[in-house]
Amino acid sequence: MDVFCIGNLNYDISFHVSRLPDMHEKIRCDDAFFSCGGSAGNTACWLGSLGFETGMVGAVGEDPLGYLQLQDLASYHVKTETVRRTGATGIAVILVEGEAKRMIKFTGANQWISVDESIRCARHIHVSSCPLTIVKEIIAICRDVPLTLSWDPQELLFTELVPHVTYLFINEDDLRRKIGTTPLKEARDVLPAQCLVVTRNGGGCSILTHDTIDIPPFGYAAVDSTGAGDAFDAGFISGLLTQHTLKECGILGTAASTMKVQHRGARGGICRRDDFNAFLRKHDLTITL
Image 1 (cartoon, one colour):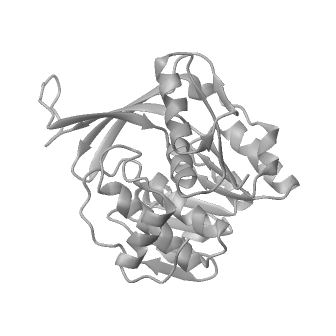
Image 2: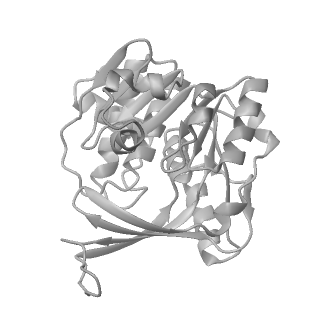
């Protein structure tokens, strides 16, 4: 197994609006879109489609939405033997306003995620939006084997665990909420992962180790930014799995997120490796997967 992704699996209901409603106000949306989602699931689908042997650890409900999620994962060649079925499938309602979005989540079956010992057979582990006990258990396994570990905590950032993580992915907004006005070059002093990767709104990223590497955006306008960070994570991890440099990993992550934001839905824009490499060539990049 190349990689296991561990975290949420949701069914997404997205409303595209020109503005957000005021209190007690009803507005009409410009468009509605329904799709499978969940951060770790989105990353797994990208990796599976890009040709990596990918397993998913998560939980869905014993309901039609859970069955639909399993079908969707399988369509992207993601192995689902380690996905539990219990309760009701998680749901996310997303209000998309241009490049901005707001989200309401029903956790559902995601609260019953459990770590399977089979993750020990992977080359890399990626975890997203998991509670403290789960992240601790994953860190212990990765230290024991040992395995490289990437973590995209989103709203569930536990700073005491950061030093035990190989790659920490964090959006610049979440970083600002965590470190305030601290200069970016000092962010790794606050979040001392081996490698801190800060993704930027509008594309691009900064990679902080003992040096700082800045990756510029590709410059495309966003149709829907839902799942852009998950796509970035997959692109970056795909570079790790193919022994690319950190700079190249950042470019691959930025490319994947750029492809994603041009499509609606959390899993829009997912493509096979040939199409991904064609996108890179289109922008005169010599790196490939």
